Length: 184
Image: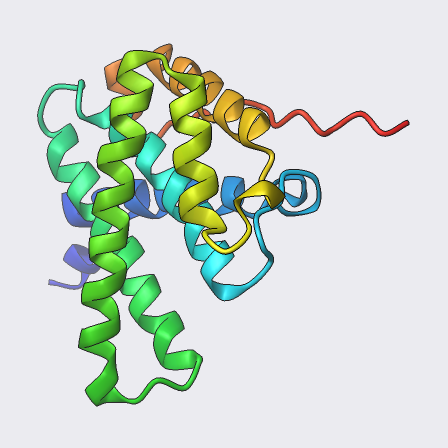
């Protein structure tokens, strides 16, 4: 009986993989160059956009992997929305307002995912850059470095494509290296 407490269960292994993938998504989303050089606002909504675009890149790769990649993708997506729910509550939104905000943020996320995936499928960096600027900073889209962000997403999608399915299912996540702006 006591020994069963120390055995590795598949659930614990899955939890570690989910945590590894989601941790890599969040770590990539926090890179200073995204905010300092490329114009993503360093605000709660800007950070949501950054995590969202990195998660969208992971999901873009996972869609072409064999099962159980779909389950892994769903688990990581669920983790994202749990994190968003927690963040909304930390910002002081009361229990009655959380579901309404979550629905709005989920609609935003899925709308972005469709538009970003279509641009990535078409290899259209201009459309991807326009979508990013419109979504990340709708009041000031000119503040976003469209080409740098679009190039980063395209390079990341290529980098992910090079990750073998077995490694992806084990939690290997590979984003491109963000290239900071050259300052003169």
